[in-house]
Length: 115
Image 1 (cartoon, rainbow, N blue to C red):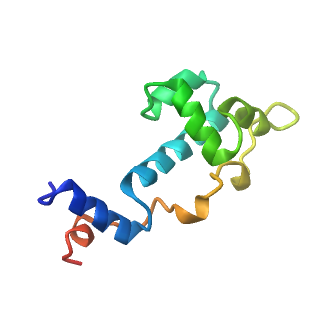
Image 2: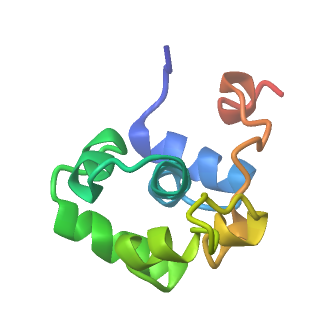
């Protein structure tokens, strides 16, 4: 339970994480999408829905902005020549991955200033 305003939360989150909450959340969703594209044969519309996107066209646009390729092309590029999935780390990180770290150590107490 948070006991401060959304704007205070946003400022504290950005101060702790180095990026805004929305940007951070979008990146986590895209990392999950990339993993699903690599590890499953789910349709892209299903992957979009599982990652919190109601509009698969918007999902594809956001994905392309981060990975510099469409989800379909990304999926094809992660296939091994013999048909297996590629697991190489360089194929599963967004362009700006160095900015985003899911394990930032952000806690409720660090956001409300008691850390």
